[in-house]
Image (tube, rainbow, N blue to C red):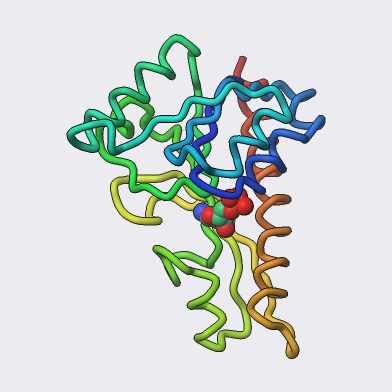
Length: 192
Ligand code: GRF
């Protein structure tokens, strides 16, 4: 199954997927990393795993539609089946959604619909909620909306700081994303 991963920053989710031999053995092929930030650390991680990188900057295009069209032109020859968003800091428009309907997946560090949007972990921590978590979902035109594939809870411990809570949320993300992709691969292999 050929995928493109989209990321803008650190890339720990990208690396969790890229380094998984289980996923590779089940048929995952990461054809390209699409990154909108030329300085992002995720680019270094992609190089480590010899995964091709395409840096596509929004500022090089007149509008978001043209920017996404340029990305589509890069994806088409690669026969990408799924797009995995992993810390991609842009709202996807109908241009990309129309090209890959129901085939774009996102990960978000809260129990959606709670704390959608930016700084979800910070806001969940500040709220004092005893339980937060992670959501993986198909995307639609909204911000962090769309059909939910999987949610897992992360319990806030009594002496948690924002950093320790964040650390466990990220660990949960990495495990969950791998599991969701594995399920998708198994389903795809079964369909063929
Ligand atoms: C993750 O918390 C993910 O849920 C959110 O952005 C963050 C990306 O982290 N969408 P990383 O770049 O994968 O380390």
